[in-house]
Length: 312
Image (cartoon, rainbow, N blue to C red; front, side, top):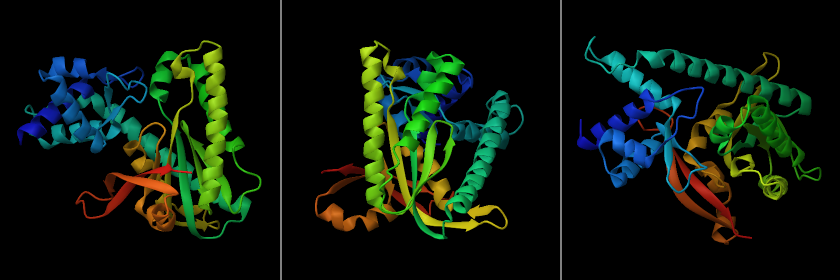
C-alpha cells in the first residue's frame, strides 16, 4: 500500500470510528489532523481525494474551516477491508455492520420508491417511452440543519422546500415537466425541454431567496435558509405500466453523481453537454469539467461530469 493510500485510510478509519447515525458526525480539518497526526495541508489534500472517490462528504455549510463526514460508501469499503483479512488482524469495524445494513436497506427502498414513482407518473401523465432530462434538486446543508432543529421543525423545513420545487413548475411550459417523487430532502423531475428546466430553476431560486430574506429579517441562523444544487442527466426512460416496472437507469445516475457537486451548482452529464454544445459555443452557457463517475468497478464505463453556468 502506498503512503498516500495509508494516510487516506487512516483518515477514513477515524471518521468511521466517530460515525454516529443519529448525531452530527462532521469533524473539522483541525480535529482530523490532530487525531491522525497530520498537518492541515495534508488533511485537506487527502480529504479532497477521498471526497472525489465518494468515501467522505464535506459539510456545505462550513466553507471556512471545512468539516468532513464518512459516507455510506466509506463505511462499506472499510467493512470490506475488515472482512477480507484474517480473523484477529482486521480493523475492528463490526459495530458498523448494522449501520451499513440499514443504509443498504434504505437504498433498496429508495430504488423501489423511485421505480413506483416513475410508473405512477407515466400512468398519470400518459408519458411515452423515450429520452428525458432527469433532474434532481437537492438541499445542501440539511445534515447540519437536522442536528440543530427539532425533529418536527426539520421535517416541516424539508417539506416546505419540496413544496417550493413543485410550486415552481411553469404552467406555460414548452413541453413535459413532471414531478416524479420527493426522496429525502430532494425532488426528482422529468423534463423534455431544457429551457423549461431553466425557467423552473429560476423560479425555485426566487422562492428560496424570498424564504431566505424572511429568515434574515426574523434573525434566524443561517441553517434555516434554503441552499440547493441541481443535477441534470439525459437518458432513456421506459414505462412498463402493465408490470408496474420502469427502466430507470438514467434516474439512478443522478443520485449516484449528486455527491460530486456542491451548493449552488448545476451539475450535468456529458449527454446533456452534447445537446447544449451549440449554446455553449455561442456563450450562452459556460461549462467546467469537474469530475467523472465510473459505472463499474473496473473504471471502464466513465461518465464525464460538468458544472454548468448560465451566462445570460
